[in-house]
Length: 594
Image 1 (tube, rainbow, N blue to C red):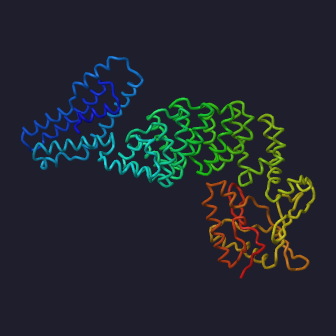
Image 2: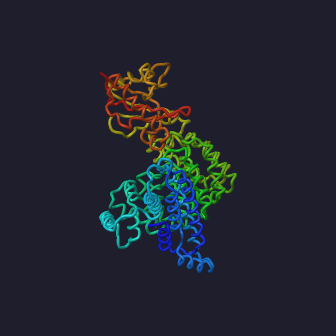
Image 3: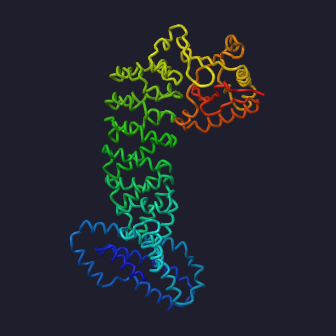
């Protein structure tokens, strides 16, 4: 196929109707090939061969008189929307051809090829090769009819309904390299890909060329593999239905924006971030899309994937319900405040603080005030069971008295008691309204803690939230004591504290006393924070460090020949002191030492 045939083929397939643009493209091609002819002057071939090649080359670039006449006729009409789209298509064609010419010039060393060119046929073969490369870049690889049918049959085996998606099937078959790349990007088997995975994007009608397939491959590469299926099947069609994606250019913009985010965040940014902000009319143009997407990327850039899911899936829907945030300026102000907060607080603020106090925000200054209060509150709540705090009856009752932002000070006043009432050890007392137990000004009261194994006595009154009593066997106590007093071993293992459930002391003596029967010890120990697994799941930024600390604790216990007895995650917990998160091994009631 010559260049003239190629242009005619493009004209027929794309229904082009504007000759002036065709003429510009051909003029551009002529200039490119004239540059090649200048390079050919360095060849040591006879002038007649070069002259004949030049004539053939320029002849290939001429346009049929019938095509020219048709173009002139159509040019006289007013430009329709379709003809405007044609101009866009032609501009893209010119970009493709220009880029292909750059590639060809890089691939072909004209200085070295001089010795290989012996006759006119060789020069024409060289020119024909370039034409084929350009054609492949536009229409896909040229394949035989039998090979096309073989590939179509393969696609049918993969689950693609050929009859209902004939054009798309031919496009995939003609661009088997991209098709193969798409298959590799999907985590599911091929059948699922073509039955469902690509069905959503097929229905949009946006993917009709090799260039469009290249965009899909690029988008898949920028997305976490586990999310590619849902992104193509559900999210892109929803973006299309919402009018966020209207054209091929918009699809290209989506791919470009995806490259601005972390790979694991691309899916949730579009599914939750963009679709949610579009729902409240924050996205009305391409400029809005770019602005909002980059804001959301900035919002979650310092937090982990798990925290980002919480922020966008759980927090953002509530936050977008605040009128002040329902504008680009309001959202930008919120993100600006977020950048000032410590990363470990952001998820907590979005999931709890802002949703619970959002009704107080009536202005931009209110937003700043409530956000700053949320940062302060998060600092106090870090390492606590935040969900238990916010959903406790005690908090709900206090919240009902907070009518304006000045009333938030009430939270500061009752925070210590709120944290105590929300502690996992005191669930029964909180649910039963045991006010005597929570009265920190009263004398010490005792309550039995319901658990299997050894006994645990909860201490209320002035010791509530401070101490409990564990009653353990003598062998268990001595194993616990041995671990607690192994200061040198813990220091050598890299700890600047003793990561063992603290045994309280009185005048440097351990507060551990034999029971009357002499077989058990009553051990006073400190109340600690969240179970290890729950803290790690909600504070991903610290997870690796904490898991490492837990593993080192196990190694030291083994080195001390101490058998804990039930060393699972629930028998590790955390405590936060001076913003340092510390891991402790607890509950030595089944421990023994050799």
